[in-house]
Length: 294
Image 1 (spheres, rainbow, N blue to C red):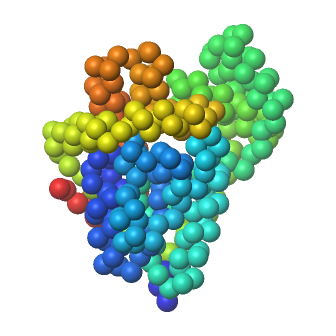
Image 2 (tube, rainbow, N blue to C red):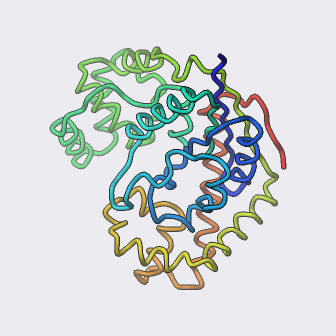
């Protein structure tokens, strides 16, 4: 029996939720979320989490897994997504993956987890070098350990250079070798037939939808939701606290933004995210099988 893996994505506010629900109903599919913020219980309004009525229409997976103060990462996501996909397929249904979180989405197309184990001692060693001598010192050390070159490394990105040097030290291998080994790892879900749909809207329409959604979130009680999440320890979990809508509202509640600045700040940062998402879809994900223009 053919195992079907449908993947629907698109930028924030494009209309993924309703499209995915209708698509899942038409294709005997259950939904696997690939939205990093939907993992957390209590992050409802600011994430545009599907409503109870929407969740009742189609079985959903990987939503409300964690307390908001408990971090969740790509390693946990890949593990839980694989388990959810296997469970759905074993019951004879199709899988519909939907959401827009970059690495979560990419994990259905390519390996995303590094198997090189980096010790705290190595991380501290590299961090100390960066703090004392800057990016140029990291690059000099990395070049010494990788005399054949640095491959496709973004040498202007300190975080990526830090990680690359850590991996070289921890593994004893040069960077091109590590890159080649990573690229040679097997494609995830290779036994599934994948159908990837990209949802799109023109720039002006999407900007209007982003602004309207931000207004709706504030009207629906986003500030009160964040007050409750602060009491539950959201700031103990940087990835949750930095999610768009939440980080701006936290800044407002802590006196760093005025009430008048809150909405424009959420809209501006959401539009910046949309731009990053579009770049990610174009450069990090295979070309879609189908593009739906609303």
